[in-house]
Length: 221
Image 1 (cartoon, rainbow, N blue to C red):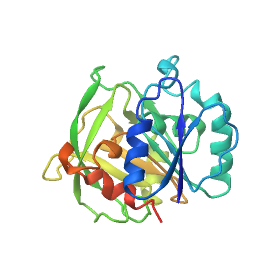
Image 2 (image 1 turned 60 degrees about the vertical axis):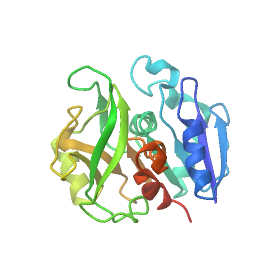
Image 3 (image 1 turned 45 degrees about the vertical axis):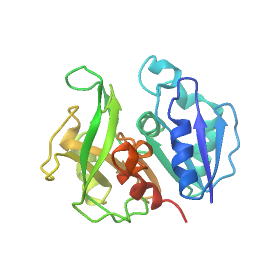
Image 4 (image 1 turned 90 degrees about the vertical axis):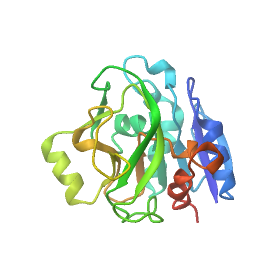
C-alpha cells in the first residue's frame, strides 16, 4: 500500500508520520507541496505550521499545487487523513465541514490527552470499540473546532463525529473550547478524516502509548 505525505514549508511531523506507516508495512513517500500529481492509495496531510500559519492556519497552504491533486484524489474516492495542521487544511479546502479557531484560553496546548471513540463505523477507527478511551498527544494553538448548529446536527445525523476529548474514565472534557468537545470528524462518505490529536506520535509503547497505531492501522490494507 502506498502512502503519500505532503510536505509544506513549516510542516514538522512528516518524518514521524512516515515512520508510523512504515511500521505498518506501507510504502511511504514524502511529497513536496509543489508537486501537482499524486499516485497513491492514501494521502496524509501531517501536522506542523504550514507557511508559519500566517493569515490563519492553512490559509496559504490550500493554494499549493499539491492541494489541487489532493482535491482530485478526493473526487476519485481516495482516502485522505489530515492530522492537526492537516485537519485545518481539510477544513480550508472544504473537504470537511467547519472551521478552526484559536484555543479558547489563547494558549498553545501540548500534552497527552484522552479521547473517546464516538463512532467506529469507518476504516480509520474500525480497530477500536465505540466509547473506547485512547491516549493520544495533542499540540496546537488553534484547535478550537467550530461549526454552526445545523451543520453540527448533520455531522451527528450522518455519523461523522468520530472522536471527543475526555478524561481517563471517558467523561468529556475540553482542552481548547472545541464545540461539543469534538476532536475528530470525517466526510459523509467516510473516506476523508481529520483530527487535531497526533496518532503518529503514539505508535510505540516506549513513547508512552501505542494507541495511535490502532487508529492508523485501520487505514492500511
